[in-house]
Amino acid sequence: MRVTFERRLSQPWWLSVVVPVGAVILAFVIAGILFLATGIDPLSTYRELFNAAFFQTGSLSQTLITATPLAFTGLAAAAAFRMKLYNIGAEGQMYMGAIFGSAAGLYLGSHVSSSAFAIAGMIVAGIAGGAAWALISGVLKAFFSTSEILTSLLLNYVAGLILTYLIFESESYWRQTKGFNATVFPTGKQLPKVAQWPTWTINLQGGIVVPFGAIVAVIVAVILWLLYSRTRFGFGAQVLGDSERAARYSGVRVRRKILAVMGLSGAIAGIGGASQVGDFAHALDGDPNGLQKLGYGYTGIVVAALARYNPFATLLVAFLLGGLQNAGNTLQGPNFPAGLVGVLQGIILFCALGCELLVRYRVRIHRKAAAKGTAAPAPAPKAAS
Image 1 (tube, helix red, strand yellow):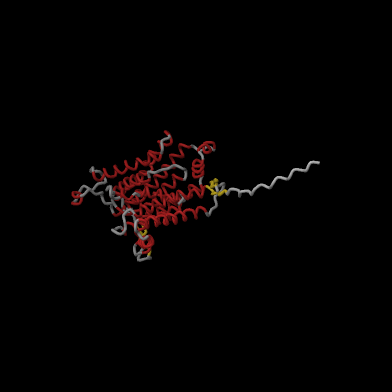
Image 2 (cartoon, rainbow, N blue to C red; image 1 turned 45 degrees about the vertical axis):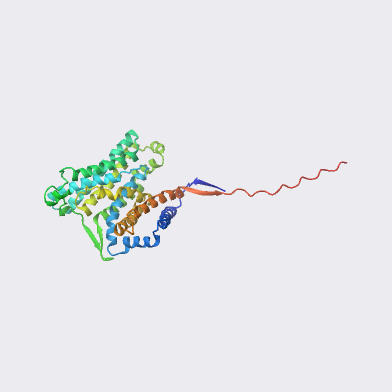
């Protein structure tokens, strides 16, 4: 028996649904085997996880808080990966969006009385910060053929150091320098009330609080879907992702497209950084054990891969993984190891990437022909006349 893989000339629509769902189920099965090997009951662990993530009172509000930044970084990764431009820097681009967004919020919150104007200014500033940081890798890729994977990844650490420096190692515009708290522990300046993003409450499960950033993420997903499926820009990006030679032949300006897609990806991550400040922290978080430790940018890669770069599926997967992260934080203790959710997310990523093979290729099983029986006896020679 011989197994071969043949590239699919056309992909059935149902594969885009069945394969990611199957990848998640496979990941939970593999994780369950690992849990059993380490003395952890997988069924009770999964029951506790899903209760803490989605069914306990107040759990959906906390899940939305965690899922909102994951939605932005997942959309940022999906925007670039669809063109096979592997932007691994959504983490750093989110930091820069938080820095620029908080600066706009602090300034506008003190000079304008319109909350809508202040919030819009924070979103625009977050877009500018994230896009500018992503374009560093974009320029190096477009003009010097430098790997965007390497440069965007390394820039994450630079952005993290800048974030820490602004709050802990300088008396910058972002740092609170007056008051008792400022002398005890370095903190960022609190956003004025007018610059804090609003929330809405849904009267379900004891009240589900929906942050404004979650609404913005849905709007960004709709825009991204329209951009890639209904515009010439999206068509050019997909052609370039399939074949650079074909893109050049059809008149696509490759360098300009690389810069545009990297800028778009960074801008989406930058909105996530502004949302993190405006929705939740209400101050720039420079603590390495705070925003930087959460790793939203890296988890966003898992979200985008599992969603197969579909913007709407990205929102759904972000909600699922956000729930798992929220449950991990809630249940963390002696009987629930801190790295359990991280292990599960890593297994989900590997299963998603492995099962992607089934979408692109068809498995063929070739069986060897059955062994033939003994040859028939040769005819007897004719008798001599």
